[in-house]
Every structure is written in structure tokens, then in C-alpha cells.
Amino acid sequence: MLGGTIGVGIEIKSDYATRSLRIAIQLSSSNQVFKNCCMTLMTQSTIRLSIAILEIFVALFLGVAIAHLGLGSVAWIFGGMGAGVIVIRSYQTISRKTFKPNKTGRKLGQAMVGLSIGFAIADSNLVAASSRLPLFIFLTLFMLLCGSGIGYIYSRISQTNLLNAMLATVPGGVATMSSIAAEYNRNVSLVAMVQTIRITSVILIIPLIAGISDRAIDRTTFSFKDYVVNREPIYLCLLILAIISAWLGVKIASKLRIPAAYFFGTLIVGIVFNYAIAYFPLINHFNFTPPPAISVIGQTLLGITVGEAWSNRVDITSKNIIHAFISVAMTIASGFIAATIATVFTSWDWLTCMLVTAPGGSTEMILVALALDHHPEIVTVAHSVRLMALNLSLPLWIFLFRYWEKQTVGR
Image: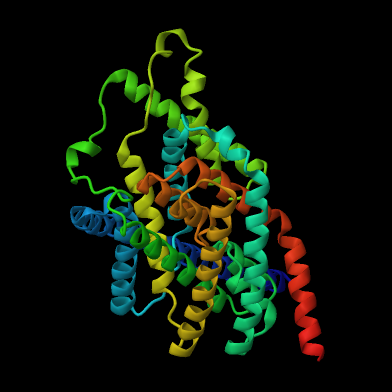
């Protein structure tokens, strides 16, 4: 009896030891998996950070080289585009891995550029520009209708479904239209490719058009001295205050679900900042402007994101590119027609009207207007109206696109 009891006790202890050993092994395995995951995340973060730093250095080098050619402020966005393509293509060739575009970089770029543009147009007559609101709404509707027609033509020549074609050709953001395409299980790569070609083409074409006139483009000699940050204590304090205000502006714009919150949030801060500090007795005489380096870095980041988008278009064919360029050419032509209409109803010159109706990214077009010194306040109001109208009417357009698609398939 005693022996049996001892045997049972030994058996229980053995079973307990076995279970403990299994638990220890499982914990050890879990810890190892956790360590491996942490190491992978750290490695990926290190790679992304290294790539981002390298992109900025290459972009600044290219930007300086292009600025010396006399292209002025728009040189930095071109330098960023080149750096994005060169660095990411090199990484993909060496590592044989894909690289997801850095969304944070574009948001930071929008915030920096928005702040710089806000300060630049703060003293402009924004009220007079806003008085043209009916015209801006009409031009927006005209461009959307043209985009719908071009989308139908593109769907026929490329043999793609109608909703996919509409999302690819309507002047909207690359990220916005691509995300909608993903939501409805459409060809995201095709939509992103056409939208990227459209934005890139407009960014390249507008400065070339402006270059026809010597007075239209800034040809000042590049100098590093122009980008040195003022180190006076009061200036640095105001710079910190402006950065904090910009951060709060982005937070409020995001809460209110304003489109392109990082851009418009900081844009508004830049417009009202000097008016706000005028109420403080000690600094009411100080007219603050952010250092030009903020605009340069912002433009560079925007250019890099466009270059990265190009580098990730690895699944496209020459036929797809040809069809995309046909649709983009029609879209730009519709922008020319809209600009001609604008010249009839306003006293603005044709280049200003082209910047108002240009089917490019809102941030990029306002930036080009500022760089070319062509009524940036008018271009800002026009693109703000178009962006708001597009986002507010997007559910209606998606409904119509899907309805037309069903009607086309049913025939």
C-alpha cells in the first residue's frame, strides 16, 4: 500500500515536471519569437531611416545642381523626385525587395510647405480671391465632368472596368483614389500609376510653360547664405511657437476631417500667425517669417514621395503606360480649356488661370504658383475650393461611377 502511494506520488511529480518543462520550452520559444520580431522591426526601422536620410542628402544635392541652372524654388521638388527614384530603385536592385512609400514623409512635407505658403500669402488680398468662389466652383465641376468623360474613353481604349478608369482619371490625390480602388477591389496599381503620371506631368509642364517668359520664373542665383537660420533668441522663440501652433493646427484640422489636414492646418496657422502675435505688447512690432529651409525640406519630401511612387510601379506594361499618357494628355488639355474659360471671366493672365485649373496635386500647384510668384493667394483659394468640393461630392461620384459601370456591363 505504501509502495503504491509512493509510486503515485512519483508519477504525479513526474507529470508536473513534464508540464513545467513544456511550459518553459513554450515560454522560451515565445521569447525567441518575440526577440526575432523585435529584431526584425528594429532592422526594418533602421533601413527605412537610413533610406530616408540618404534620400534627403541626394535630393538636396540634386536640388542645388538644378537651382544653379536657374530654376529657382521649384528645383527642390524636382531634386526630391530624382532622389526618390534613384535611391529606391537602387535599394530594390540590391536587396530584391519592394519598398512601401513613406506616408509620414509626405505629411511632413505638406505641413512644412503649408506653413511656408501661409506666411507668404498672409498679406495678400484673400478676400478678393474668395469673391471668385462661384467661378472656382464652376471650374471644379467642369474638371470633374471632363474627368468622367476622359475616364469613359480611357476604359474603352485600355479595356478596363469603368469604375477603375474613373478613379484613375478624375483629378484627385494618388492616396485618396488608390484607397478607394482598394476598398472596391479594383486595380490599385493602375489607379496609382495614372494619378502619379498626371501629377508628375503637371509638375514638370507648368514650370516649362512659365519658362517661356523670362519674367515668369525666379532665376535668382542660388546661395547657401539665403538658407541660414536666424539665431536671435526672439526669432528662435517665435519659430518654436510657430511649430507648436502648426502642430495644433494639424490636430484641429484632422479632428474636423478637413481634406489634406497637414497642409491646410498649417496653411491657416501661417496666415493668422503674425496677426495673432500682434496682440502681445513685447512682440507686436515683429513680422515673423519661417526660415526658407523649412520650405526647402518640405518641397524635398514632397518630391521624394512622388519619386518613391514611381519606383514602386513595377507591375506595369508599356501598353498601360501608353494608355495612361493618352488619358493624362486629355486631362491636361481639359485644364487648358478650363484656363481659357477663366481668362474670359477674369482679368488674370493665362498662366495664373492655368495654375488655377491645373489638374495636379493642390499642394504642388500652390507651391509652383508661389515659386513663380503668380498670384499664389488666388491659386490657394481655387485649389482649396476644388479639394473641398471633390471630397464632399466623392460619395455621389462613386455612386454614379458604380451605376454607370453596372449599366455598361449590363449591355
